View 1 (cartoon, helix red, strand yellow):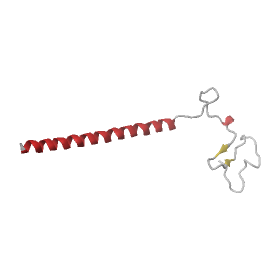
View 2: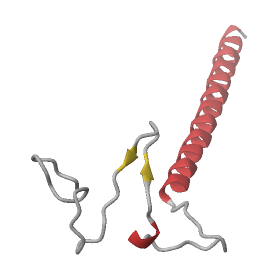
View 3: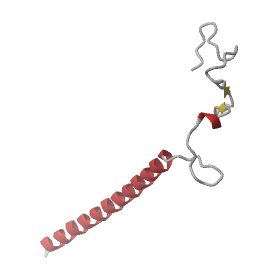
View 4: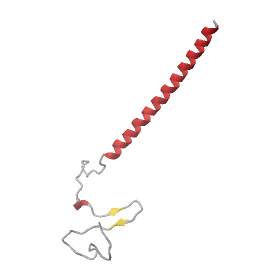
Length: 95
């Protein structure tokens, strides 16, 4: 009888450990699915035109670039126009 009690106690511990591990595996699986969803949503293009369809990235639509800090980057003129703004001066590179 003493052996049967010990075996039941061990069996109970194994069941509890299995249940705890199963809960942890399910939590990790759901976190992985969430992260995969975040990766998929950030890798798809977000820009859509007024009709809701994606528009091709064309230079003719880009008028200004503003960084998160609020600083605006200089825009390039057409390659055939040479003005003071787009000519390389004093070793500055406007790439």
